[in-house]
Amino acid sequence: MLANMKLYYRIIVKDKNGKVIKKTRLRRSRSFTIGMLQFIEQLICRDYGSNIDAPYVIIKNTVGVNKTLHPSMSNSVCAVFCPDNSSTWGILVGTGTTAPTNMDYNLATQIAHGTGAGQLDYGAHSRVQAREVGSNVDLVISRSFYNGSGNTVTIKEIGFTCASMDDTANPFYFLLARDVVSDTPVLNTETATVQYTLRTTV
Image (tube, rainbow, N blue to C red; front, side, top):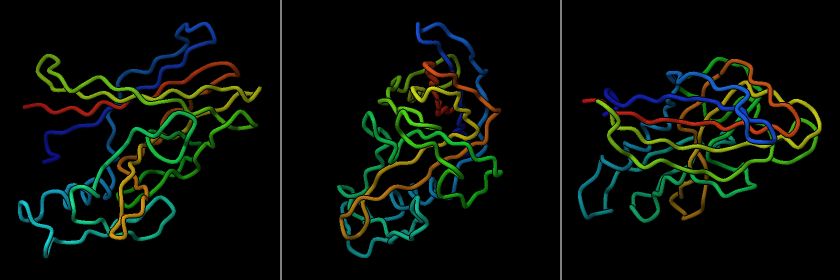
């Protein structure tokens, strides 16, 4: 299923007037985590229309605790669009430089939401709906991060997590992908936008 699905990322930095200061090329992400496949496993490895005897899949959440995904479709939402001003899930940024691994369950060092020292203001998500682009089909999701800290904040890693529910119908969050990127300084009053592109090609 993932053989023809690729993940790309791009970071765009703009000044306070909206002028583009830096725009990276579209870079190939090679860092889907085990969480991505476990979530797909939970969705497809069961009988249609029945939650009885459905296989339970255990996923490590973003604080390193094993959580059991509920087999009910209504409780298995993979929600990436975290609200504005919240850094709990969705597209996240950090300062960690540890090389990605298959078993990663969170960023190495996430940048906190806010306007204090070393923080970035997490914005809302947006998307460009899945559509045919040349010989590909692309889905683009983005999130912006404003620097109001008074000093430069450097992004060194990015990733995205989703919100779901466990077998007790409580929410939790797990990592789908993580990448270590070239140092991207975001000066005070600048905004960095992280774009992830999910692409399939026949």
